[in-house]
Length: 280
Image (cartoon, rainbow, N blue to C red; front, top):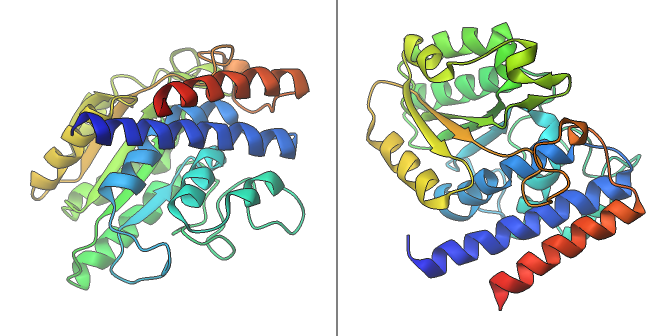
């Protein structure tokens, strides 16, 4: 990846973070912390990796993405808007009655959403089913899903992992957003999910550990996943919850809380300064 490509991705991810803050502020609710930690992964997938057509969201040969940690959709919605699936102004009506964008992804109402999700653990199962269907139909599209590390406490995650390995779903890539925090505290305190790499490997996955905010490492891991045959790939992305807004970073309290007016201004000023630096 050259410097110009990297800069472009950084601009999109910064705009996605702004979108997450904007939408949750207007909703007066939502999940900014995990949305900010995942923003770079969403950005790379939609602007570099995935073969999609925003003007034809249901194109049958498109790559699919399932957000298993569905509550972290605000920055995904921002990325979909930036990609051209719908107008960016839709973000302002997040979680409002009758709005297109709800607190968890809804495939029936939102262009670009491939699977409704929200109940933790279920998204990876849906992704496995989609990947298997591609194999059975001899389709070349690839399937990506994103889990939270806290979500990996769900037993269904490991049932799905067993399924993916058994069916040799090498067209499936599972990202885990390893920000180390969940609603009740640190993942270590709540259930001690580590070592996730050894767990996924024991279930038959090819496993890669990366910095989830480094586009070069994301690219390298995804290129590696394309070379793996007969195994699904798990990419364990070390991230910072609340990334990009200094007072939110590594603070568990921002798991599911929107900013007030003062905090909103502080966050947006910080992101605007970063965007100006990138675009300057």
